[in-house]
Length: 371
Image (cartoon, rainbow, N blue to C red; front, side):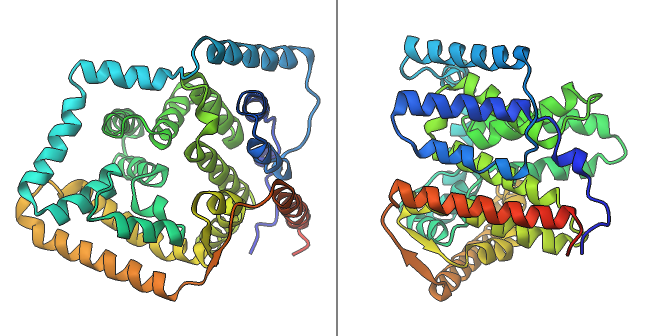
């Protein structure tokens, strides 16, 4: 099941950018929000790290970054360069593109179909789609149904596949297309993360950035754009799931299906306290739901992104909408749910401590080829 040699250099390399992100966000959250939730974020990463000595220059760099962000937050309580950029673009008329697209959908389709398309492509919720949206939240697959980092990554992969014979052109096209789509999404954290990943890969293409270094650098850049991003569940969950996915990928399973299942299980386990805090309800089959809907949601997203703008295909759009409602409804009816209030802080710490120990043991067993 596993490759004979585990590539430790890929997983156990220098993690300074990611350590910088964790150090920065943990201190800021503790100091300005007076809430210990984010410290849990710090506990989730040591299972994949090789602790290394940090020299004086690195310490100065981290402290310097911290001081800069503290000054930014003190100077402006709600400072957000992202919001400023979006506001400036809207004033320049860029916001008209999104408004025109939405008005076009409302004009050519029945309201029910238009609302479904807007939910999938723009994450715009309405009365017609609220119950469907709530079901996806309960099932733990809202990130598969509404546009998220998963869909934007999928779009980037499709573009890369199309330009297989001209990879350099494909990278330029990906950056342009993702940038335009990010505008339509008002530069959500998910779209910014993927856009920054593409830009970093292109800018530092000669250096072959390691996964964790790239993820940490992206997190630091997002913090620069919006120093209060660490208070957003969207930001936290995005980086938690990415980090756990990288950990599983680093285990080098030979079977892609096994890799997909394990990634979904890890993502489920690592986000349980956050999901309960937000929804007070969680499905025990979340990882299975995600595995089942991954390919279905990929098809629906790509189909609507391409064909939603063609009016005479409304019958097909309607069929996809009804099929989605029925499938989600049946899966929701057959799932097993646990209802809970937000966990006390001590229970959360115990949970993540056990998570860390178990994951560390499994990790050591795997890299030592004892399975």
